[in-house]
Image (tube, rainbow, N blue to C red; front, side, top):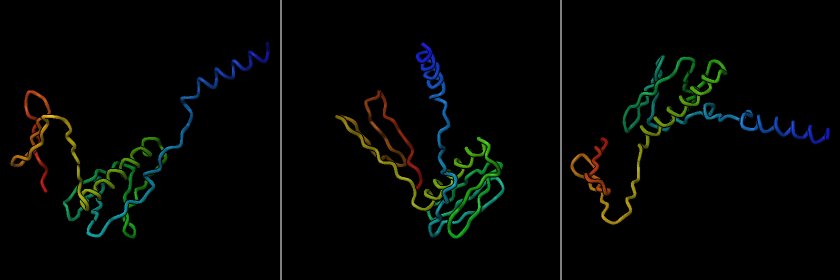
Length: 144
């Protein structure tokens, strides 16, 4: 009976903590962001201006996060290891990488419309979609 009771207690403790165990976190913030030819960064206190052949984008930089340019890549660093700083570190690096991609290669979205009677049509500066609603859905086309 003692063995059965011990096994039940151990199983209960394992179930209680199974969903709360420490998992390894992503280290995306530590990866450098490669800067292709023609892309430059203008570092300011609370933002980074990313300039490239396809335009300019601004990335906000939170307090405690630093961005520096070193040999053709941008590196983000944080002042401490608090959970908030770790989250902002990865966020800033991801936003910076997306901005660099946007000003160098641009963004593209592929839309696949499948079905009888569905239609997509470019009219003027917009995209008109007939998708079975009582009215057509209209989207403005981005510049470029």
